[in-house]
Image (cartoon, rainbow, N blue to C red; front, side, top):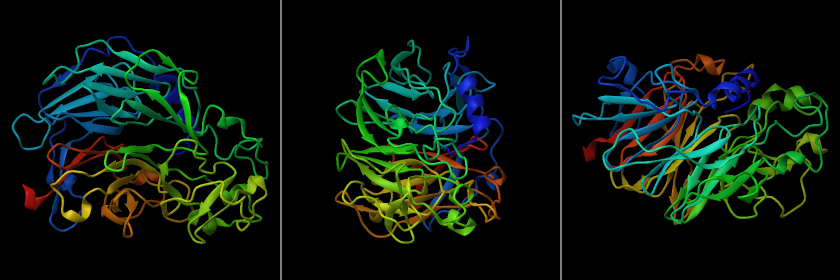
Length: 433
């Protein structure tokens, strides 16, 4: 999520702390409150249906669906109902959660399943719980997989992906906008080299099979130059790691001699990349211009919107999404329920912008990117929309819903989590029902 300094500071202090008794679950026998048809309506393509699984769960971030259909959601902050993780189960087969349980003494963003373990991330650590067959709430003690991630006031969310071999890839966001000498100060130059790249602004690799690892000494600095990649995913088909990266902010207010409000609303791209070992993706020295379709020097490093960086050093994105949409989740679709056009492609959840004023904010939707044999195919398109409401918001807080998590269930349905009202949707293709 983009920088809200006060909110991030509060979450750093309280959202990841250990709270006594929250490992004891709170189980509800009915969803709260009861769902309504009106609340469930979002726009999806013809042939698809979107229904609510649950709502008012808390500030939902990422989610995952177990083989038996149970859903687990990591919450941005500890719930008043007890715990920072919520588990949901549909008992009667109508795809609405009949049992809702809160547990865990941490909150955060990333969540995943691997070898009968549920992995969850706080802003400073990765944990796991052993899951017994058909157990909704884990009874096993929580284990620490990796700890020691830095406390930071911006881009603190830890998202992650796990490959089939048990490699754990963790996003460690950069703790600033553009690595300026004086952060977010007009005209302040960028630091070169940027010291924040030593322990941030990249992807680190650990083992999901080991516990008690420490950052950074027990990990490998897998890739760098990544401002913040809340959306990370391992694609089992191509055997590659992918990330959608949040671009930098405030070009006009920090560098008014080169950029006006319209340029700030349009620049830079949100970048979708295949992440490779040793790769450098350009932050903070560069950004990708989606209008010129070229990578340019950042103004903190002598750029004026046209100057180019050194050649063949930074990757160009597979897709250059419009500016400030905040891609917060990515999931590859390898199921059979959706039509053929969706096979092996990627869904991307856009949390919505804050940095387009005085223009309307944008995003607040789920897009689809076709892939063919591991490469981006045709142009991407908006798959699910209407989350923000009938009128585009001027501020992100005015949006009705903000998509922030994605998961594909064993039956091939797509699940979407919302951070505003804690709503979970199930999107299915009617021809497969």
